[in-house]
Structure formats: structure tokens, C-alpha cells
Length: 247
Image 1 (spheres, rainbow, N blue to C red):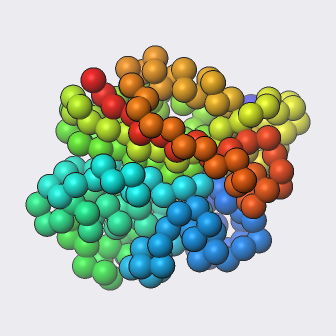
Image 2 (cartoon, one colour):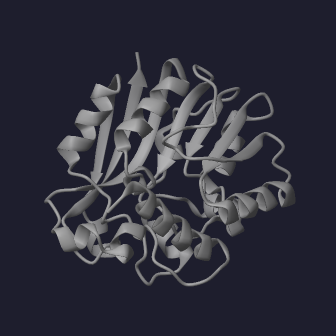
Image 3 (cartoon, helix red, strand yellow):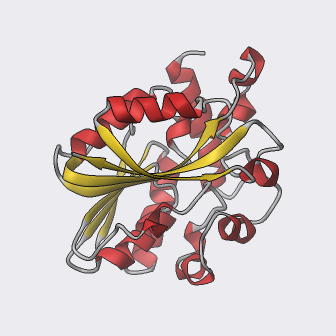
């Protein structure tokens, strides 16, 4: 399947979700949004801070690493309705800034509405592809991403772009789905599996290799293998939570 076809599947699926329609997604499990968010590491306070921004997507909480501080510039890859951007905005304060990038127009509209309605003046959302970020080089202190990089056809480009925009010493905090066993060709080309973060995921060893080849030093790993049973119908995968540094 061509890269453009994969991106079209993802955009269509998440466009429907932004409109409140049913559709497959990362974390699609039959549970409601609050249940999913709680199971992957969000507190009740975090969920309730901007409830409209919690769509029950994701496979972790990249803002919980403790590396986001006051005054930082933070970039969220695949920002969706903005939940991780808004949580980061609370941490960076008025002296900091948060940028969310998403390729789905309807998600950008929803996120901007949430920012306006809740008075987040230190957050902006940009329409763009995480394989070619609309962000200046060496301009951000931290990059976060929650269960989105698996959806990108060219993960090498994503990691290269994240490295490019980070300042020296900047950190990457990621929660993402990785495979523990290779999928079949049929599974790889299944639209539903692609949109639900399974079909486009890669093996854990390959994921870590691409990160290191991009120039990152991986300094922290945490694995959630139970997420497969909770949210992904028992597929051979896990949620890999990473903290990495641009040296």
C-alpha cells in the first residue's frame, strides 16, 4: 500500500472521530473515553481539565514523564483534539508555549475551539504532516507524541524531523504501539487495523533502531504489554513509553 493511501485512511478515520462519529482509532476497545484515558495513565484531574479534548485515544500519557517544565516550548506530534497540549500548557505556564501539529483538518478545528473555549493562550495548533513538520529547526525544548508515530508510513522521517526541531539537549517523550511479532500481509493492508494503530506499527527492535539512527539517546523505557488485551484484541504488541535525548 502506498504512503498516500495510508495517510488517506488515517485522515478519514480521525476526521470522523473529530465529528463525534463512530470509527476505528488507536485505543478502539468498546470502552468510553474516560475508561480508556484512565487505563493508560491519566488522572481524574487531567481528564476533567478539558473533557472535550479527551477522545479516548492513545496508549499512554507522555506528559507524565516529569520532563516538561515551566517556560519550555513543547511540540505535540499528532495533537488530535489537544488533550496532551493542554496538559503541557499547564506545566509550561505563561512563560512557555505549546505547539500541536496534526494532519487532520477537523481535529485542528476541534482543538482550536477547545483552546479558545478554555482560554489557553499559550497553545497553538498547526495543520501539518509529522513527516515534514511546519516548525523551525532547534526551536523546541521537548517533543511529545501519544500513539501517533505508528500511523505514519515513514517513521524514519518522523524521528529525523523530531531531532531537527529539538534544541540540543532537548527531549522526546513518546508513548507508542510497537509489535512483538510481525503481522501478515493481509493485516498490514487492512484499513481498520491501519487506522487503529496496529497495521502500521513496526517491531520494537526496529523502532528503537530508527530512533538511535536519528541521533537520539534512549534513556528510559517502560512497557505496557497488558494493553493488547485491554484495547487491541490480543494482537502481539505493546505500548512502549520512551524518553530520549538529542545530544
